[in-house]
Amino acid sequence: MNKKQTKRDIILKAAEKLFSAKGFDATTVDEIAHEAGVNKALLYYYFKNKSDIMEQLIDNFVTLSVGFKEKVLSKFQDINLLESNTSTTELLNEMLEYFKNDEEVLRIALMESLKPEKTPFLRRMMNFMNETDQNRIINKARNLGFKFGQDKLQMIITQFFTGSVPFIIYIIYRDKWAEFFSVPVEELDKKFITAFTQTHIQYHKQSSGKEAEGNVNPVIKKTGKTVQKNKKRK
Image (cartoon, rainbow, N blue to C red; front, side):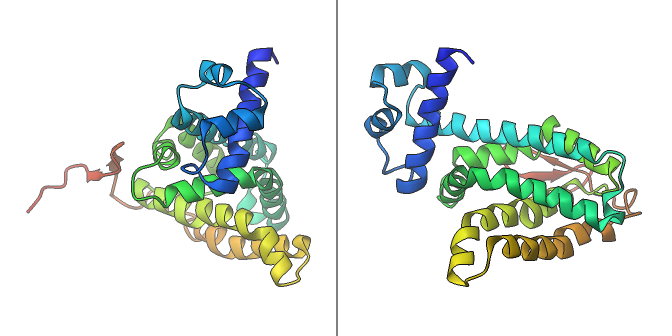
């Protein structure tokens, strides 16, 4: 890795730590530079402003997450996960191990997404749901036995609200929840995976054989609005 990339990563890591602890609005560029051990001139060499740091932080997270998901799904390419509880549990354990290292950036994402205005995280996630990266992951999941149906809007809603969001919330609250209820983290992970399997994974099991059903084929615009093809307003 070259020096430019190293310094950029150090700045991003410093920003991630401060955004997570203090919030985006309360963190200053001076504090990020101090935490990273660089001067402001160097920080501005890599980033236009604080918002640019946030956008690149989120973009890095989404890009790396996509790569990880593709890699871990490829590992199970010869297995029908919906017919193998052991393999499904192994897959979910690998995902937990990966994303628990991103607790800080996930906390930032959650805080930012709760703001009334459209934030970089929310924009990036909404765009991701309608991009080729997402389509590649879906195709890999289909090869493992998952069914998604023809209703794209239903698929997006299901993946986001019963798949992505529960994982994010669990990672953020995991350690504190385990401490409060005096439950070993390993045991808590097992319980979460059981709950996730009985909800999100169960949805895909119930959708098996329904791939060709449904006649809604929405176009998800970047504005977040949904328009159904050939649907006339009465």
